[in-house]
Length: 418
Ligand code: HEM
View 1 (tube, helix red, strand yellow):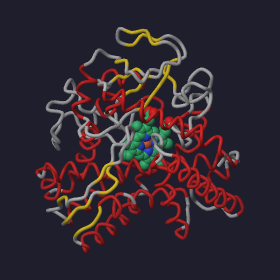
View 2: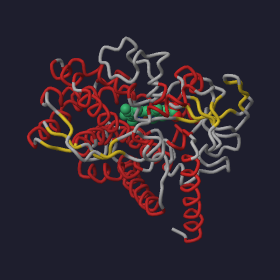
View 3: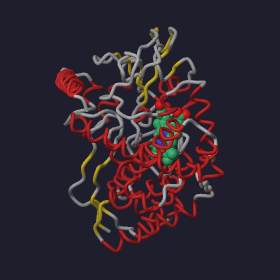
């Protein structure tokens, strides 16, 4: 790590921190979503953003849309892209490169526009189709039931560390073909890298992240080499066979871990917290674990794991009553869209019988619609059913903590008792 880079980044971090807080204190709703006390209850701010004229101009320089209709329009309209005109990244403040503070991890094809996006998405798409995902059900069920059995035997446990984290980590490791002997390290690095999604807040965190990325890449690079010589029926062998550039293959594999791990773990934590807080939904799920699919959809709407995404146009685009200039960053608040009363009656109530089931943007839309949605839905449904069957009186214990992130709305720890 070079000292000049560190000094420059450290100075920028300090400016970002104080500047962001000052704008939050001055009333900027988007920046408030980053700080206490506002972060503890984002629903008020989400409402404020939805009720403002759309798009809303934040003092941070980005435009924000927060109604379901506008968010849908932005993610579906092909004139909105994920890279600015100079090919840099949106978080890179249009400087033509990735910003290590705002986008510390590579997002592979999620951060690319066609035609590269199309090529890479096609390359791995076959591994995540609904039919293929159905074939993973026995694997997912076996893992979820074992984790739930172990948790119930303990009586008190951390839902995040003991169930929500190991399940998606093991599933994506199995799909990629990471051997069990490396699975622990793989999950640890995946978690460290996932924690960096949405930006870092200190140089120490950035160094930790750089190290985790390097170690994860070394592990995946080694495995890919092995698969080239000795292929198996897994996704790493597929990448080795397709003769994808070695660097690109490692980036893709690391990205799949990142995309599928922390997000699904977040969904499970949020779902259990919301349902046990409201009590009635959890009791109903325990009485009929067949409702787990409905519980998953309602959780995705109620508290979207990924709270926003961003796009930018390369030409002037009319949105609402505004002309959006090229390279202007537009944030689509997917989490706020899930609480839009124009779509969902009593949006702040967790309702298993909601007639608008599935009408959320938690998996985004358009060409970047979450490739792993069928897998995430399967994992969450099977895990919630396994937990509810065994733990009808599951409840929170003190000590829950949330990640301080605008992007991922998640618990870092969620102590519960059976
Ligand atoms: C509850 C869990 C999950 C949530 C909430 C979620 C959410 C999202 C969202 C919002 C996007 C699009 C972002 C945008 O439009 O800019 C996305 C893209 C993506 N997700 Fe997921 N995801 C989840 C699980 C998974 C899983 C299990 C995988 C599988 C490995 C996965 C793989 C991907 C990939 C590959 C993309 C990029 C798609 C593209 O750019 O074409 N996700 N996800």
